[in-house]
Image (cartoon, rainbow over all chains, first blue to last red; front, top):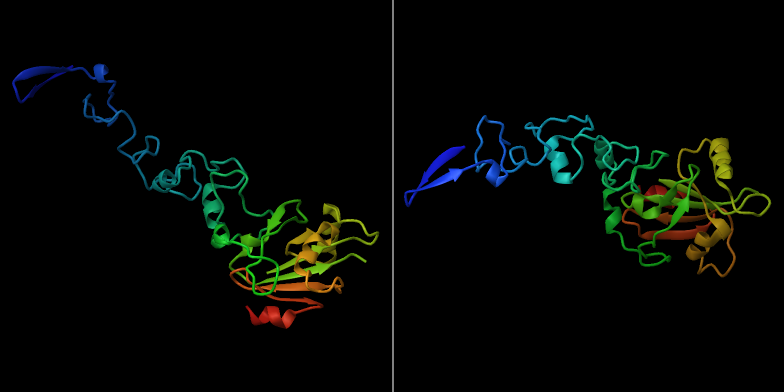
Length: 156
Length: 83
């Protein structure tokens, strides 16, 4: 409990509990000016060190805060690939359906920007998605920043 | 990057995943080997081929996903020229 004198000479009894405030700044005081929670570290869950990487996924707390990923969970979307690796592979660390190819083929950053025009020479190729030898769906537009040599063959 | 699309296996049916694995292992391929069931994708690219194509049928696509050339037979030089 603390008393604050404010202009106008009236007494305000500031009770931390009344305002629902706790000592979130962890500075030994209970002030109504302490934020309810988690503002001292940029919103990273109470760890004051924005440069730390407690889940060891290659991303700092500040980077995870910006991305919206969980700073205490290496694989935020649970797709089996760490958040940092997903960024390196141009996949979404918050989308469990978007992960690097099992076959190791990197996806390009431009893939979400491609709009197909058709199937003729000179067209931006329409996209196709076909199942590969790992049982995964391979999308042409995932390889938008490299030359593609597409070969159709048969087993005969 | 090379993508190999298998249209059918020796009995004329569509390739299953294990067929794609066999193909990749047989030739030591580390690139995507995909199944083009019923040659559906091939015929999209081959719509102007007059209803007849030879295998391998190849498509060269440049950076930016623009279709550079479509042909029956190989086009290695065209592909290498875009690298």
